[in-house]
Amino acid sequence: MNEKYQIAIDGPASAGKSTVAKIVAKDLQYVYCDTGAMYRAVTLKAMENGIDVNDEIKIGKMLDDTKITFKPGDPVQKVFLDGTEVTEKIRQTNVTNLVSTVAAQKRVREVLTDWQRQLASDGGIVMDGRDIGSSVLPKAEVKIFLIASVDERAERRYKENLAKGMNVSLDQLKKEIEIRDQKDSTRKISPLTKAADAVEVDTTSMTIDDVVNKILEIVDSVSMRK
Ligand code: CDP
Ligand code: CDP
Image 1 (cartoon, protein in one colour):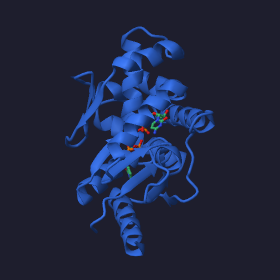
Image 2 (tube, protein in one colour; image 1 turned 135 degrees about the vertical axis):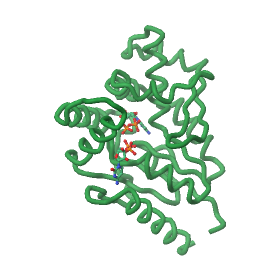
Image 3 (cartoon, protein in one colour; image 1 turned 30 degrees about the vertical axis):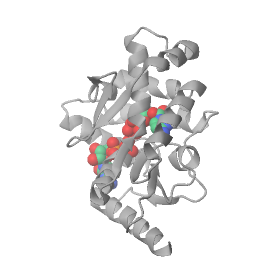
């Protein structure tokens, strides 16, 4: 496979997007871009600066001097906000519960979509999010839409939290996931949606390896058609 594709991986919260996107990128020697981390970093910056997350004008202005960068890392990619590492901070519950409000704002989506398109312009990228196949990279050669039942997704988050020493109840996690999915799929601008030409993969009873292999098969099938 000589050509360097754009690979878009979308889907609801905790469907396994970032876990598998990172492995696929490593396998193909592509760049990995976690667009959710960008929306989280913007939300964190607003919160740390005492800006109301509903204040679209102030958040829009704040973006004029905001820089978000990534560095490869194991097991997770490192995220930097204005030069400071925020990899852990952006995953905190208070950021998670407010990020969908910030991500619904027009200016935020315009600016971040622009950065994401620049990062993907040379191809050779795996980008995961909610609107990558439908809006950010409509010409991506490979589009995947990952889903799993909400019970399975809550269970996955629960186990992940336990491993980090956090004990949030399964019911609470399920509720948070449902609220976020609802907000993300009903917002006016580029909502969470499956692009018409995306391949849906239901990962409910699939292991991480199964999902990675399935995506690599899809990439192979695209390269054979070219
Ligand atoms: O990893 P998790 O499923 O918890 O979420 P994420 O990928 O880190 O994304 C966090 C939030 O950012 C989502 O719930 C969306 O509100 C927003 N987001 C978005 O609007 N568009 C994207 N392309 C990626 C994330
Ligand atoms: O990025 P997204 O929110 O879609 O999900 P993630 O953060 O990649 O995955 C959420 C959790 O599910 C992680 O702890 C993964 O290890 C786990 N996972 C899994 O158990 N089985 C899969 N097929 C995919 C992910």
